[in-house]
Image 1 (spheres, rainbow, N blue to C red):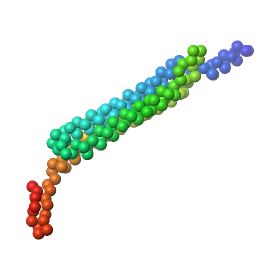
Image 2: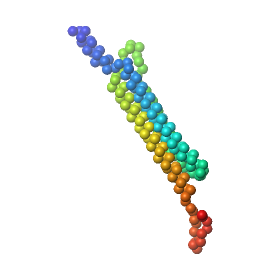
Image 3: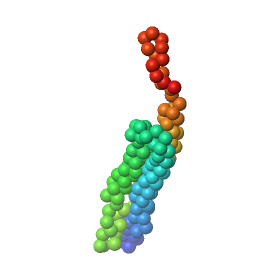
Length: 160
């Protein structure tokens, strides 16, 4: 009866803490960092191409159109922050070969990393696509606006 009670205690204490549970947590760390930075790179590329295109035609509008590129770059920082927080919560293995990192915690870290990473991927893509259209529309608008100054007596002073 004593052996059966010890086995029951060991199964409940360490049965849900297999050695492969750590890989779930580290996959969450990798997913958070990689997917967020992928979205950040995608958004930066998409908005940057349109900024270059508009900058060639209208060099004066480059600095006010940098905002989507900066916003897309910040998305990657969120993924790195989550990756550092998750990696800090994963314990190092002990020399006694008894794991304290459970499947539940590994799955929670995996889901947190995937949630942050996929959100960063979607947000970076959206910022890039919307930034692309926004930057191009600013360039289009500035090329099609005719400025006409009308004097006090109703005569044209300048314009096209």
